[in-house]
Image (cartoon, rainbow, N blue to C red; front, top):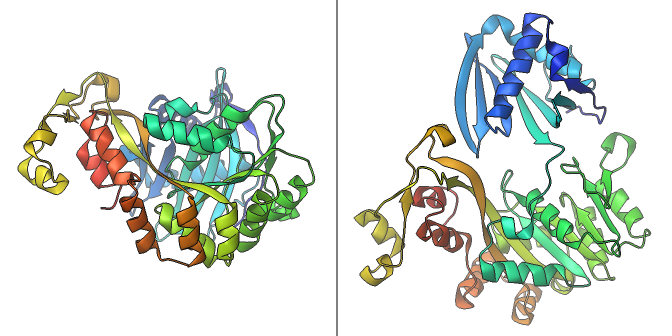
Length: 404
C-alpha cells in the first residue's frame, strides 16, 4: 500500500470552467459536504459507478454515474493527491489533499482498492476549522463525566479509549486534551493523521516513509519534558511497551486501541506481550465507546416498546412508567431520515486494586466482564439503554451497535 504526506489545496472556484469530469468531482464533494457526510464512496459496478455518502454512520445512495466516467474520475483524484501513482491500478493506494469552499477548508483522505469492476474509491472529509467537542458534549452521563474529569486530572498513568473504526475514539481523546490545554501544560501528540489542529499543542504527524513512526516519535517525546502525551493509536508491541513505561515514569498518556469493549482491551495489551504487572501498574482506565444516531429533535415522536422489546429488556410495568422512548419520523430538517447527528455511548472501566489483582492473575475477559457486573459498572448496552429511555436514540440503534 502506498501513501505520502504531500498535500495540495484546491479551492472549489478552481473547478469552474474546467473539463466536465473535474466539475463533476467538485459537485460531488460539495454536495457531500452540504449533506454533512463524513465519507464519499465511488464504487464501480458492472455497468455504472454507484455514488454513496455516509451521514451519521449510515450509507445513502445519491447518484449513479456512467461507467465511462470511472477511470477519469479516479485518475483525477490521484493527480489531486500528488502522492498516488496514476498508472498503478493493481494495488491499494492512499493519499490526501485539501479542498476549500469559501472560508471552509477540508482535509480529504483518499483510499483506493482494486475490485473486479475497477478501483473503488472512498474520500473521507475532515473540516480543519472545526474544533473538538468539549467533555460535556460527548454524551457522557453525569456520573461518567465526573469520572472522566477525575481521570484526566491524574498526574500520570495510561488512559485508553477503545472501539472499532468510526466509534469516536479520536474525538474523545481530543476532548480530553482540550480540557487540559493550558499555558502551564506541555502537551505533545503523535498522530496518523492529525485530525484537528489544537493551538498550543505540539502535534507530530507520523511519516513511516522517513522512519517517523509512533514508537520513534514517542521515544523522542519522553526527552521533551512533556506533561501529557497523546498517541493516536497503539498498533504494535513496541509502542505499547513505551506507552506503559512512560505512564510509570511520571507521564499522563492518552491513546486508543481497536477492541470491542473494555475487558478486550486488557486482553489485547497482554497479547502484545506486555507483562501483567506493567499493565496493572500503569493503566488508569479504559473507556469503550460507540457512536449511535441521535433522533432528530424536530420530528421525533413518542412511541411504546413492543411486547417483544419489553421481553428483551426485561422491563416490568413499574419500570415502563419511567421510560420515555421515542421513534424516528423524518422531516426536512433531517432529510427524512429521522436522525440528526450522533452521540456516544460509553463504558468506563477504572483500574481498582481488586482489578489489578485480576490482571496480575491473568483473568479472562469473561471474568473481567463479570467483575464489571458485580461492581455495578455500566456496559455499553446499559449506557445506551439509558439514552433510549431518555428519548435520545432508538432501541434498534443500541441493539445493532452493542452486545448483550
